[in-house]
Length: 105
Image 1 (tube, one colour):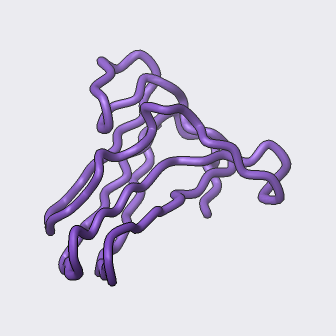
Image 2: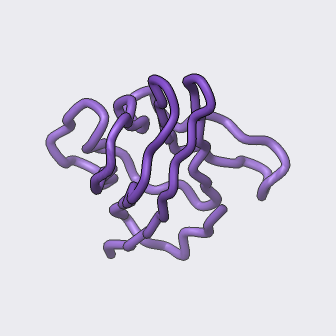
Image 3: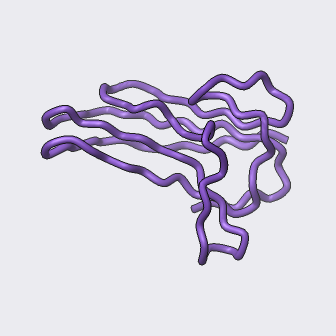
């Protein structure tokens, strides 16, 4: 969960360093809260990574007016209260990853 203190855009990086299991998948999506963290709503269908199945760096960019690219660049402003919601699937899936958020004025 994070708070946007008046920034217009942000870059979210998921650094996946280990993946195991049978057909493991990881999907991350941005959600926002209109009430400060009680209720969570999916921000936009485009604010979702593609299904991640391997190690690597995966990026979601948010900035009003940017050229939109499915599963990576969203032309919308950053909400005030947000979080990344993760869905992991497969048979005995395991992911090791970290997330970094960088704000843009």
